[in-house]
Amino acid sequence: MIDLEDRRTLVRNIEVAHSAGARLQPACQTAGITVRTLQRWKAHDGLVVGDKRPELERASPGHALNEDERTRILAVAN
Image (cartoon, rainbow, N blue to C red; front, side):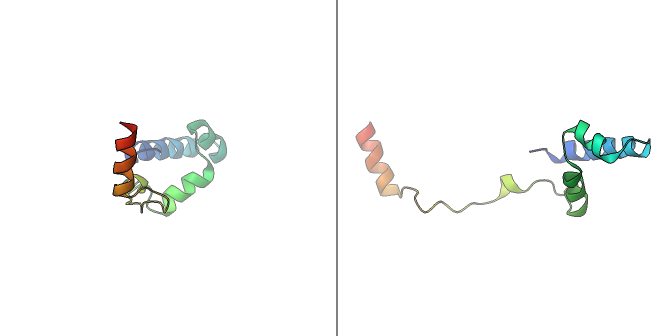
C-alpha cells in the first residue's frame, strides 16, 4: 500500500517525466506501478482520500471462535 503523500509525489513525478517526453508506460514501470493504477488513482479520488482499506471495519469470519470457545481453549492451553 502506498500512503497518500507518496501517491501524490509519485503521480507528480510521473507527470513531469511524461511532459518532458517520456512515454507513460515506461515512466509508470520505473515508478513501480501500472498505467492502470495511475488512471484509477486519478479517476477515483485516489489522490484526495488515499487507500481506505486500513480504515474499513470488517465483519468477523463465520468460523471465528466466540468468546466462550476462546476462553475454554486458552484455559486448556495454559
